Amino acid sequence: MKAKRSIKIITFVKLIYFMKMTKQQLVEQIKKKKSFLCIGLDVDIDKIPPHLSAFEDPIFEFNKQIIDATHHLAVAYKPNTAFYEAYGIKGWKALQKTIDYLNGKHPEIFTIADAKRGDIGNTSTRYAKAFFEDLNFNALTVAPYMGSDSVEPFLAFENKFTILLALTSNIGGLDFQTLQIDNLALYKKVLRTSLTWKNAKNLMYVVGATRPEYFAEIRKIIPHHFLLVPGIGAQGGNLQGVCTYGLNNDIGLLVNSSRGIIYASSEKDFAEKAAEKALELQQEMESYL
Image 1 (cartoon, rainbow, N blue to C red):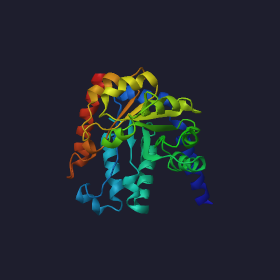
Image 2: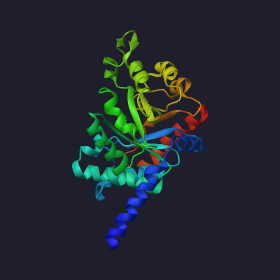
Image 3: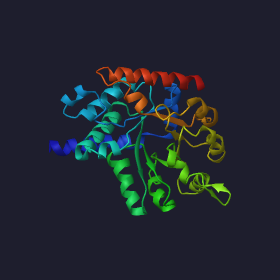
Image 4: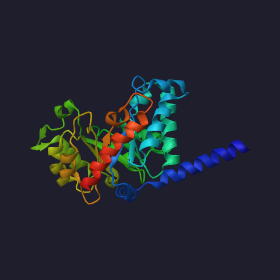
């Protein structure tokens, strides 16, 4: 009987979290913390401090200490699921513990599963349930290539956000994304078409920081949506350029830094050094706000 009661309590708590995050709550957190920093939890066992190997779950312990040291500076965390899937069931359990820790300790923080999903409708529905209901993330990155019926199942979840790949920061992103189709760049076609999809209000978009000159054009098409911006730090993105062209009335930016923060040190002071790097970015962000 006690076991059943515990399961019910856990389910109830998860339901509360599932209903919690809205766009307005995200904006309020940004204004409160004077930060639109997203920290990428892309954990590579070979790069984390050696002393963590003594813990039962080194990946989770690394994430926990990073979160404890930086949660007051960040409004979002973004685990890239590949870094967990690579370690099989142990990695997946570490991801589960990480998101449960965030939801339990800091339910006001926006959580993003960087999984880049997207498939035919019934498969997308299952992906959505996995990340939005079971793992209970607030948002999920999704590839748009298969079109509306592959994305709309994600958009059907209220107060959950689908972050569509629009213009990415990798070198190969220009192989297709800027190709001209009927005198319109493909990424612009993706942006315009996505606005016609059901529940498009639940969309956010990935736009790489290494392409700041594109932000002005992007804002002409999607002036009110949030942009998830990778590429700051190790990839060479420039925060000033991003803010100059990307900020809107609701701030509208979540700027991600991963390696530049979480691997600031490989010693026992790794969490403290991560906080120092996060503070540098937060203070720069505050200057633009």
